Amino acid sequence: MAKVVVIGIAGEPGLWLADLGNGTVKPLESTTGDLASVSALRKPGSVFVKDVDLAVAVSSADRVFSGHVDS
View 1 (cartoon, rainbow, N blue to C red):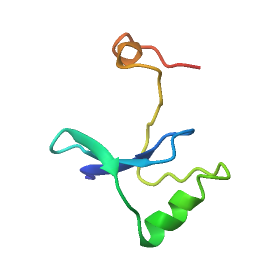
View 2: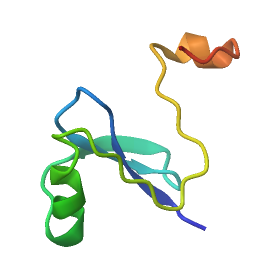
View 3: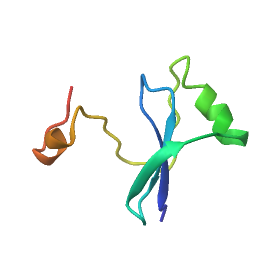
View 4: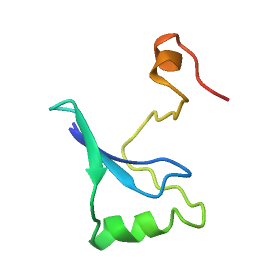
């Protein structure tokens, strides 16, 4: 099972590295290789998803904990 997820949010230029095993999230300072290639596709609006079966961006953690998904 994956223990690390790279996250990109629409409208945010950078990527984030979420380490699920350690419970940490930090900015990904640089990308190379295939990751840099797929990251570049974000600029024109492309979406790349691999081995993720649920991802929802919401306006706040409070919304998540109350069971809401922003529309």
